[in-house]
Length: 185
Image 1: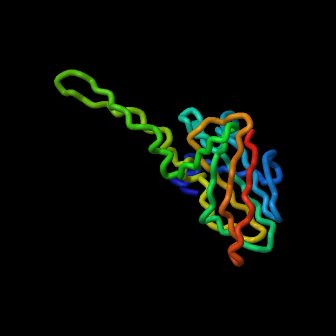
Image 2: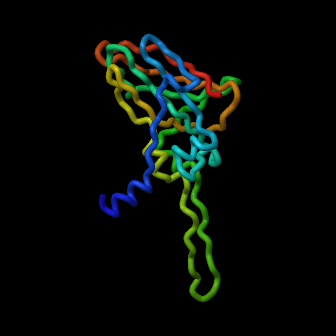
Image 3: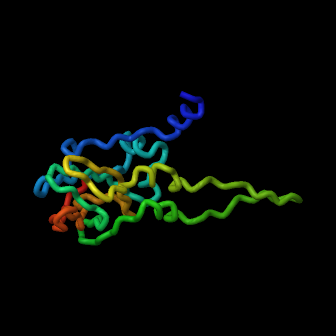
């Protein structure tokens, strides 16, 4: 292994999503299981996002694991996800590519004097590669396979909230699966 490969391996740590059956919050319809887990703080956030804690910036990452044990591949290209608060407010998922824009630009620091030097401010923490690199991006889930990744919501975790997923379709028949409404605790 080259030195560059060692540095690249250190920079981008691996993250392995747990199996759908091992997560506490899940729902099965037919032979498709969807499990969710909110990443608010602690070791699991560190494992997934390193030093970044998205919840500190108003972004709630929710891990979604879809296990397809049916005999039909699933199309997910029209899947919709909403965070539903206990009082019924709905927050649509924010595309991972837009998360970095949720934190507005900051004014650069300036040093007075004859040179009038501009100092670089801190970089936007929401531009971390983990946000887009670990986002849910699957367009299909073949029969007998699993797809996983994070969905991002501009809200905080509330007791009694649910994740509402709809728009999953059997690829061969075009039949839409029932919606999934899974509690997030």
